[in-house]
Length: 182
Image (cartoon, rainbow, N blue to C red; front, top):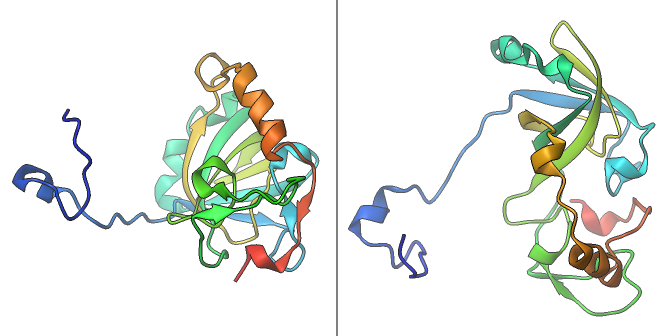
């Protein structure tokens, strides 16, 4: 691996086979009571009783085998209702006016608006995952599902905990402000 920065403008011939655009197809969709009008929790873990469903496309139902063994799952989904992104943002719960780089926040407005949620899997029936602790809006396209594995998905970091509080990321506010949506 080289130390050079790679962009679409300076890739060498070997690297030019990599696509500039990547496309994904949903494996299913969230069903929830959250919409851009009602808002939703900033993180699903802050409202563990928030219930919803993930309806899996028939083509992927066999891939659900053994997922029901896990109590928690990681769901990657598309923030399909957010508007344009900015490189600098001020988290809603921040107690200061400092604008942070987008990648140091959890803002849904991103160049590639992909959400990541760790949610509780209550049961699976006929290709429908009954889940709680969700933060996705109704109709959000689901891109992937993975089991949550505490041995590798839970890293204790005092530095991250301290900066989380300093940056104003540690909050229990709901996003109902129209500036987050189209």
